[in-house]
Length: 191
View 1 (spheres, one colour):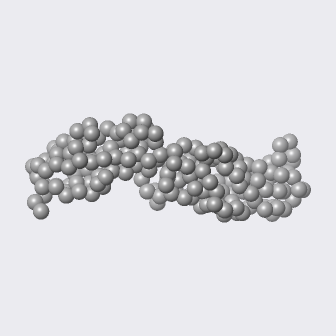
View 2 (cartoon, rainbow, N blue to C red):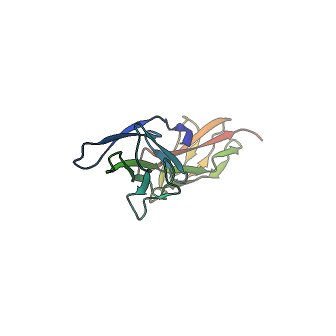
View 3 (cartoon, rainbow, N blue to C red):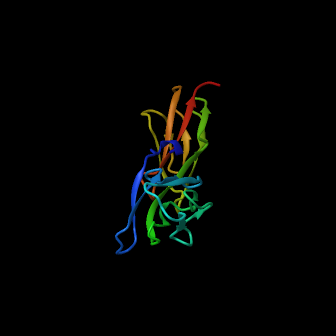
């Protein structure tokens, strides 16, 4: 899964002081705020009406929730090394001087990879593949070959190519989260 696979848009958040009548709406981009482990995410807050003060951000999970590298309307969020949902607190001051606060949930996705990601083998050749499920507590995975008659792969990632030349795909699916998988492409043919 790559960074470009996530859609961007706007999420309207209503900021309110507990029990107060004053409301301010902020648009947060991207919508939803989603990032993969190992990548940074730029988040922009756009006031829909005039705010009296600056916008401040804070990571709610003080220990292990990631870092903010900047402040103001545009911040860079550096996620932790563990996948999950983390929360940023956005604070601003309304025109009346009241502090207004909103929680912004940021989803941090695992970043799976297979090594090697691309390989070339002779017909009947074999190669050891390894998976890294960055962001999950274990790298364990189940292996499969996508194509029928595309060769064989053992539970530990040792692939044996078929005798027939072609393009084949190996898939490693996390044993912790079946929605997380990584692929490798193998070209089988005479060199």
